[in-house]
Image (cartoon, rainbow over all chains, first blue to last red):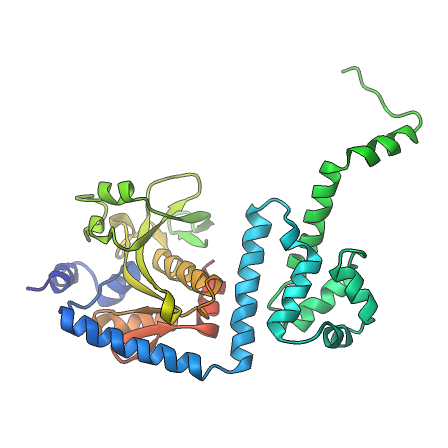
Length: 179
Length: 153
């Protein structure tokens, strides 16, 4: 009896088909020539699918790629300039295959402001974050955009020794504890 | 990951990570699994474990077909304690497939994942995980792939 067929037959005496499928993937026993034939079949199907991919589906897939990479960065990474809010809005524009001007129009903000945000000269407010969430068809949650901003702020607070020291000198009667 | 502990009826945290060649070698004759996972050395194998533990609750073997923008699932198995009626944790297979779908988006493959199942079991992969039949292969991509990610991860 073939390898996987044997395993399946043994399992069948203990489990239903549904239980087996919920526990594992049992592949088919295939000869080398069968494997080659199936490989060709799936290759043709995949390439055909790629050839006929609509712009809508391309954007949908690319936005999910963008989302999952953001998710990984926000969970694990330390701040990186390539993941600044501005850089990511710029990437968003690229994925949509649009201009910054048309995105600014869609978001109801002046192009100059969007440019300033993209170049890191102005921080986005929460209203802009909500608009970006809506604009992405809710694929990119507002919290993801917002965390890009706060991650940079965290980084700046940790690094900003000079300003911290300047501000400390302006404080009177700072609490002191001897405990 | 959303693994479900049947006894306490609680969702528990789990992580998925890649197995090293040494870990795969050590799986030979492992009593927790029916398949011989040490034979999967040429493929990429991931394990799902409870948070802060090393013991695999399930394994998945995949091959990355970069030219076709596709990940193929060769084999999946939950550990013996997580098979059948009296399994300890639920959703192991779903989490492992969803993890691969997510990777297939990150790689720019449109979430495209394929597998070849024993014919008698195909129906369950179609009904439970949203796979579509494509010749002998079952495939999952774009929206259905994302639905699985939302459900299990």
